[in-house]
Image (cartoon, rainbow, N blue to C red; front, side, top):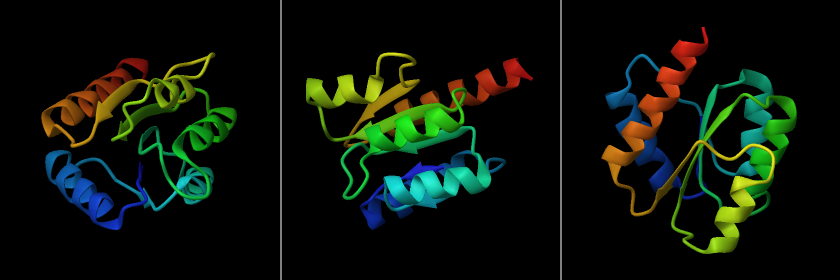
Length: 124
């Protein structure tokens, strides 16, 4: 699932990721609240999210989803390079799985997703 408040960025991410990973079903949400609702309905195993979003931000969404599903993997894609945002997203109990800064280096994002997919295969 991709959670990104900027519509153009969300559409570009979805398009590029669908082409790179055609066997993966990518869902999308425009903010953290939509992300939590969509997660509750569909239970995706990997969530790619921005941190700074109106309403419910990414860090709050991660916490809410972790309560429902501690095993879900998170890749944070954000322009926020501040230490506070990173600490907030990492949390104390289980850190996020990968952190990618904007502007997005797609090779880094592809590697992060590939690692999460490989972990899912290992766990089966």
